[in-house]
View 1 (cartoon, helix red, strand yellow):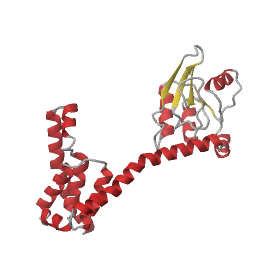
View 2 (spheres, one colour):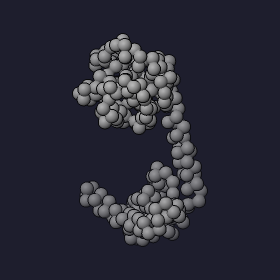
View 3 (spheres, helix red, strand yellow):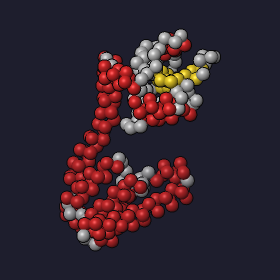
Length: 264
């Protein structure tokens, strides 16, 4: 029989994970041979649907029992509906929990006691885990926040209103073309395109040009073209960028047409 235990590490000495859906690893164990395999949990960094991803993994691997710290009611219902036993409220090392399971010393989870345990089980380890996750997410967002602030400063310094008025002549076709060209040669996080787009609007550039700019920013990559050619081939890279450039202009006009019809 195959057993799955949510774990923080890759072996039987690892600690049982506090939450089923977002545990770092899922350890699959054959209860007869004691052979095991630690598989990274693809839902560990997911913001939504992590529990369901773990459920699908358990079902697809023909698991008969799940041992974990906490399992959400939705995941519990899906597991039990597929004939999988669920044991929660567990802590300690994976090997120790496995031995208790084999000796029949674990109680099955029910939705009521599982919910009560989830409320009561706020210990120091859970708090540290939550703080660590929050700190990691903030650290990942910090470079993006800094880049946005710097980008606004650079744009206001080097792009004057007079220069933009000279480039964008209020011609719908030319403005869209120039905006798309501008977006095509830039590279970076898509969020930055929104920052520049807002500044362009503040400087009087048409929404058509800004729409073409944003679409080209996220679909066309002239700066990254050499790397794309090396990875995917010159024919594919050139054709993809050309099509995306043309479609950016087309989508900009379609967007403005739809917006006009809706608002008019």
